[in-house]
Amino acid sequence: MPIKSKAQRRKFAELLVKGKISPETFEEWNRSTGKAELPERIRPKASAKAKRKVKSKRASKSKAASARKAAR
Image 1 (cartoon, one colour):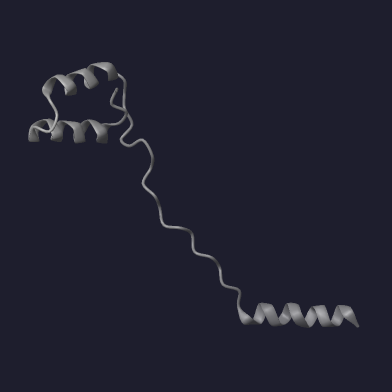
Image 2: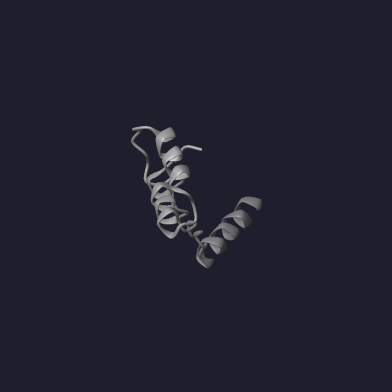
Protein backbone atom coordinates (compact mmCIF):
# COMPACT_ATOMS: atom_id res chain seq x y z
CA MET A 1 0.00 0.00 0.00
CA PRO A 2 1.84 3.14 -1.12
CA ILE A 3 1.66 6.33 0.92
CA LYS A 4 -0.53 8.87 -0.88
CA SER A 5 0.11 12.17 0.94
CA LYS A 6 2.56 13.99 3.19
CA ALA A 7 0.03 13.93 6.03
CA GLN A 8 -0.31 10.16 5.68
CA ARG A 9 3.49 9.74 5.72
CA ARG A 10 3.70 11.77 8.95
CA LYS A 11 0.94 9.66 10.53
CA PHE A 12 2.66 6.39 9.65
CA ALA A 13 5.98 7.74 10.95
CA GLU A 14 4.22 8.58 14.22
CA LEU A 15 2.79 5.04 14.40
CA LEU A 16 6.29 3.67 13.76
CA VAL A 17 7.72 5.71 16.65
CA LYS A 18 4.91 4.52 18.95
CA GLY A 19 5.60 0.91 17.92
CA LYS A 20 2.17 0.29 16.41
CA ILE A 21 3.61 -0.71 13.01
CA SER A 22 6.86 -2.47 12.24
CA PRO A 23 9.82 -0.71 10.59
CA GLU A 24 9.61 -3.23 7.72
CA THR A 25 6.00 -2.27 7.01
CA PHE A 26 6.81 1.44 7.04
CA GLU A 27 9.80 0.96 4.73
CA GLU A 28 7.74 -1.18 2.35
CA TRP A 29 5.04 1.49 2.06
CA ASN A 30 7.63 4.25 1.77
CA ARG A 31 9.54 2.37 -0.95
CA SER A 32 6.39 1.67 -2.97
CA THR A 33 5.64 5.41 -2.98
CA GLY A 34 8.93 6.18 -4.68
CA LYS A 35 10.29 9.70 -5.09
CA ALA A 36 6.95 11.15 -6.14
CA GLU A 37 6.11 14.65 -4.94
CA LEU A 38 3.14 14.05 -2.65
CA PRO A 39 0.29 16.48 -2.00
CA GLU A 40 -0.17 17.75 1.54
CA ARG A 41 -3.58 16.06 1.76
CA ILE A 42 -5.60 13.73 -0.47
CA ARG A 43 -8.83 15.72 -0.10
CA PRO A 44 -9.00 19.35 0.94
CA LYS A 45 -10.46 19.98 4.35
CA ALA A 46 -14.20 20.57 4.32
CA SER A 47 -15.05 24.26 4.26
CA ALA A 48 -18.04 25.90 5.83
CA LYS A 49 -21.15 25.84 3.67
CA ALA A 50 -22.03 29.09 1.98
CA LYS A 51 -24.70 31.07 3.74
CA ARG A 52 -27.98 31.48 1.92
CA LYS A 53 -29.14 34.98 1.20
CA VAL A 54 -32.31 35.88 3.01
CA LYS A 55 -34.78 37.84 0.92
CA SER A 56 -35.85 41.06 2.52
CA LYS A 57 -39.52 41.68 3.21
CA ARG A 58 -39.43 44.70 0.92
CA ALA A 59 -38.38 42.62 -2.05
CA SER A 60 -41.23 40.21 -1.40
CA LYS A 61 -43.77 43.02 -1.05
CA SER A 62 -42.63 44.79 -4.20
CA LYS A 63 -42.86 41.56 -6.21
CA ALA A 64 -46.35 40.95 -4.87
CA ALA A 65 -47.39 44.52 -5.72
CA SER A 66 -46.03 44.27 -9.27
CA ALA A 67 -47.83 40.94 -9.71
CA ARG A 68 -51.12 42.54 -8.64
CA LYS A 69 -50.57 45.39 -11.11
CA ALA A 70 -49.87 42.95 -13.93
CA ALA A 71 -53.06 40.99 -13.14
CA ARG A 72 -55.26 44.12 -13.58
